Image (tube, rainbow, N blue to C red):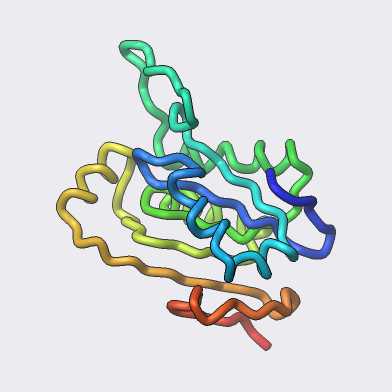
Length: 166
């Protein structure tokens, strides 16, 4: 967790793609000069999928990796632990899929989503890995922000912006 959650602002919640962790997936973005303005206004909570953190051990034989649904169901526990009331989810690949499932199950906790390279059909990490091999590297970014945030996204970070009701 970086920064201090504010009562009136959502926290940016990140979830990485397969074969990555929060550092390898998001450090380039969060340390970019243009992102510093946003970082002054929002706390960031970065989630690593099981076994993806730095120095993680190999899973034991017979271990069954959790499904995308199961991974999305762990997020309310993380939010409760850090006393986070609402989030703007930012996910890449499988992380985008997990955050989408989370937003559909818990819409009151989600202020918006930034989704990159999502495959909505993938059921698990193995499906996601298979689709990565067969897909182009197209990136889709959707930003849904409520008007109350009152921030400007730097032009260098804007690819596609859909604003909520004004």
